[in-house]
Length: 507
Image (cartoon, rainbow, N blue to C red; front, side, top):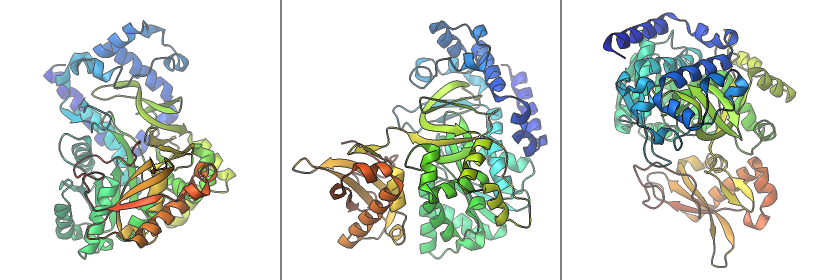
């Protein structure tokens, strides 16, 4: 790609982004079959990406033989091991030209060696539409002066720079959004909000859920009155419970959690794949309160992330309980396996399922905004994500999920004692009897006590029994109460500072 064509590509894409209404973009899937978009991406990648050409040749696959969705679904899935790490970085890009991209991000390396992900300006523009959904439908930022405070880590990681750029593109499109980038500097975030927040009608904090909670709690301890800033939260990178959302919402003075929060299903590999909407949050909150309905829908005793997605931008499939997606990026990906377990549900199927349980989320959202027709209701499909399947522990044959323990730490009184981080393990005592161990990180300035241990253990047990039918039925009662250990914040063995946290450990 020469300089002139690169320049023209950028100008054309930016003009389209600025001039195309959000509603038009969200309706494309109604007129263009999403399998057709996936097939066209495949033809383009097979013809123009050297690594994928070589990958297909090694599998003895003729691209011209792929004529239907059924053919497409027989293509071998690609992943980091069999594709990304096997070819030079340039060969993974169109025409073998790394220089056709203008930005490189690094993945976190939580599953091994960090991976580099190049992208071009145009790749960010299609992701900016996901942010536009949130800022327009959830936060009404088209009519409210908004300060967007980027609390993601800045650097080579994808979150900070990608989010900053997308928010600025929305400002270019005409949204009254002003961006500031303190990154994950807690003191600077609090200073920014304190000195600038009152100049805006609302303040949006964008960051990882546990970090944002830490910012809010630290602010409360120092006298910050969050409700005066009409705080909204955009989150990514970690699963959280609806109890967590309610707790944080209470602390920021949220009046309507469905419209004050939005979580992104994002990845360094391909930007944002889907996003929470007021509709998906309303549905998830109903399912959190009705575990039987959640298990009937998702097939597991834990609540996944639930988002809606644009099937023209990101085409999802499910293969053996694992999510595959196809989408255009600096490194275009066809049937890519990110190792996330989950599933997809059509819009109509979701509403029909909920109706059978006596719940109408559209009507529920209408109740919350009687003066206007509620925003954020579009017939987009849903994808639900449990995350990596190896983040569970097995105890008496029951799969126990970190999400089950998280809810136990969010019950009344306990959040004041803890940070929310823990390590779940199955261990053995001197007699080789197994027991469930939960090591919990104490909040700053909090000392452990036997009373706190007992309260936390009882709370975790009650939520495990409520949420996890395997645990309730498989584990003998005398082995059900977890053994809780309380350690100071930043404990070197369990919660080292600056290291990506793992909520489970295998014995």
